[in-house]
Amino acid sequence: MELDIENLTPQERYELIGKLIEEIKLRKYSFETGKAYISVAKEFLKSGKTPREFLLSHTTKSRSTMRSVYFALKFFYENILNEKFDEKLPLAKKSLKLPVILNREEINKMIEAISNIKHRLVLMFLYYSGLRLDEVRNLKWQDIDFNREITHIKTTKGEKERIVFLHPKLKEMLRIYGINNQGLVFKSQRGGKLSKRTIQKIVKSAAKKSGIKKKATPHTLRHSFATHLLEAGCDIRHIQKLLGHKNIQTTQIYTHIANKDIKNLANLL
Image (cartoon, rainbow, N blue to C red; front, side, top):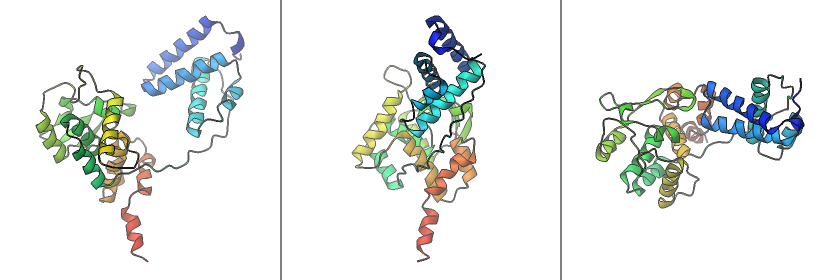
């Protein structure tokens, strides 16, 4: 039986959203994914539109947003309403957008431009370990093994734990910073985790102080980490493991950016 959106009571809408939240929790989806699915479902239930009409109302948005809305609505229909989702919109494939990469000199300038040791160490973990923003926020002292020179990344995207090397420069800076036995490596002034906004500001400030015109974000340092390893001859499957990518296809984007083979081609002319 098809859902009669127009005649749903506020209580019925509330209950449906409650079921959606339960399903998201049971599947242990990320906070960002859950937030997006809930937002789309609420908007859809208030719209009074058919799924096709609702999707068409988003065609002016970006390709990425369109895909997100589509999959959120599909999940809602199939897992909350237990109804078949018949819409098969011809979703265009994502265009290949190459990430911004900083060269080694730019990375060094950024790190040296920051006098605050904690902020400098944040930059170094983003680059020398290739960590995601949230992975830096959740990093704990007990995750770092100084003797084996490795870092165990436990709070990861998709809950896929991984091991990364502890770069000598990181090891040295951690000793200057002051090593503890347990707890968060990076704490806010209130003793909790650093906010995402704080880390984004650290990167933006370092880039500005270094005179870098490229758009630099925390993820830019992770992209640079992977690209520099590939250019130095590291096997792409090792890079895949270091980044924690589930599929090698995700890692292969760096083959489009790495300068090693491109430079070699210039020698043919």
